Image 1 (cartoon, rainbow, N blue to C red):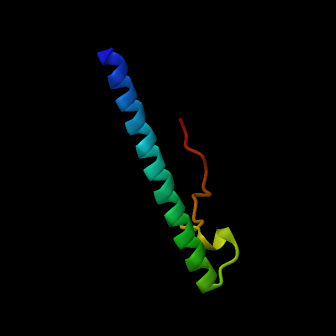
Image 2 (cartoon, rainbow, N blue to C red; image 1 turned 90 degrees about the horizontal axis):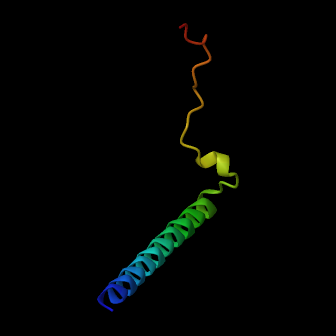
Image 3 (cartoon, one colour; image 1 turned 90 degrees about the vertical axis):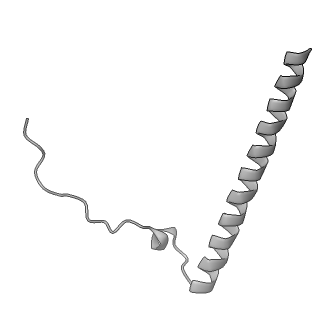
Length: 62
């Protein structure tokens, strides 16, 4: 019986953590959407953090 109660407590804790993480992601998503709406960016590529400078040289030799 003790093990079952521990299992239930752990399961409830995992569900609570998952719910909090979902809420945090939703908040970030809504803030990002609001920022995007204010700045006029429509394309998701405009928010990319990469500068596109990848190495285009020759492959490595063995």
